Image (cartoon, rainbow, N blue to C red; front, side, top):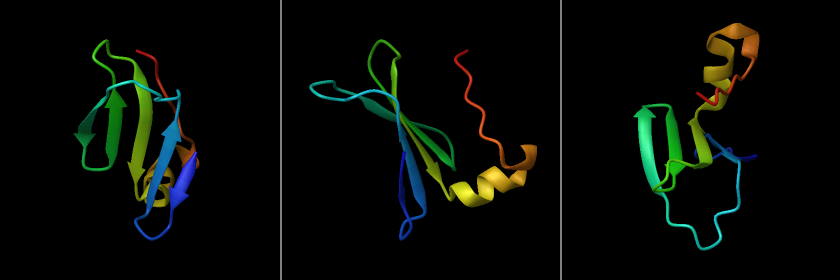
Length: 66
């Protein structure tokens, strides 16, 4: 996981992207995901993650594989 404090964006890299073509999808204003054509998730980007994590669930981050 990396965090850019100037842009207030956290990136959670789940897989290496070497030679993989991905499409960035924005399911909400606060989340971007990089998906391969077969639907494999490579990177998840959180815009202003501090506010998102404090907004609910006592600051817990939950990822679902559904």
